[in-house]
Length: 139
Image 1 (tube, rainbow, N blue to C red):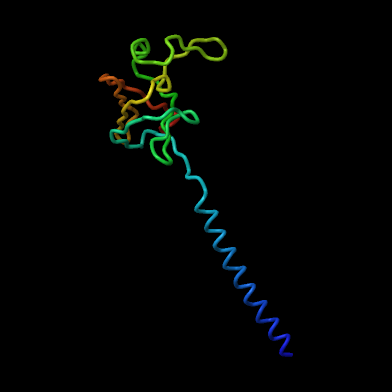
Image 2: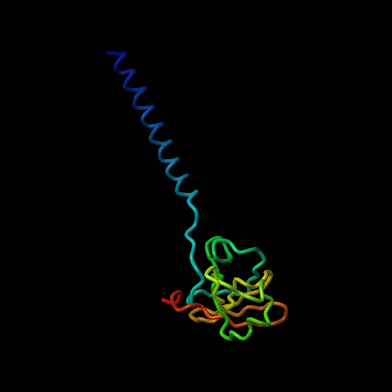
């Protein structure tokens, strides 16, 4: 009888330790999940922020979870010839020309955007270029 009691005590202690380990592992896994990435949209407010890094996954990370889309186009398409773009002739894989976009600018540049506005102000080489946030990002 004493032996059974002793075995029950050991099993209870083991089960308690196992339970604690599972709880710790659960919280560790939750804390290691990548943050949800959000695209800069019309509601986003951006104080003057420097973009210094290269593009990653179709945009630039403004912070740990906020991405600025490289596909945003300027209001004035005639600026495509005057801004410091990567290639003067912009082509799609199908061989058609495409309008320039924010993704064609070399970093570093500064961005500024007011909340609830579809305009993104980009400052590069003492020139301010106004870009428009696409309608599909302005729900």
